[in-house]
Length: 181
Image 1 (cartoon, rainbow, N blue to C red):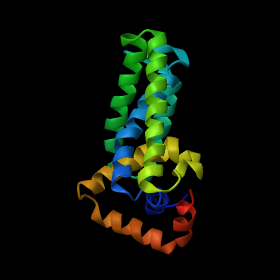
Image 2 (cartoon, rainbow, N blue to C red):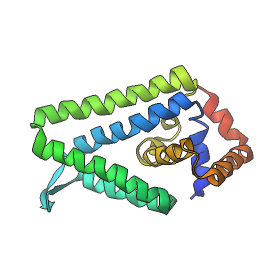
Image 3 (cartoon, helix red, strand yellow):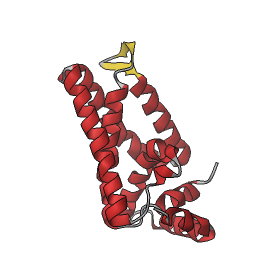
């Protein structure tokens, strides 16, 4: 497995424009909400407290587990952010909305926010999205990396930002791959 800076480098070469980065910081959690809502419809028929155990539960645990493999500090923040989104999705599907409305909301949030990602890449980044080259990025890595991007936007973790820049410089093919639209 690539180290954390190398994985961030792959993501970072696809996301260099500040507007596109902010579109992702806002849009990726919205995509996660839509995905969690949709996955909640695969219900395993039991609950732990108020939470229905569903395919969304399994996906959430895999994603958070992956976060902890990458970086514990950012994983803690990811657990809070995506845990809240997971609980909201569970609540919306099982308590707040009827099934038809929940499906509509899941589709609008998922596909609408994904469309914004493509707009960000086409209009602002002028590069194809990373998911074209690595689908894993879209559903496992991007939710994590936007937490890191947010830290960078607030001037945190400068040493990690430098390590990522060094990893990009050490692998010039990353720039070539990401520059094709």
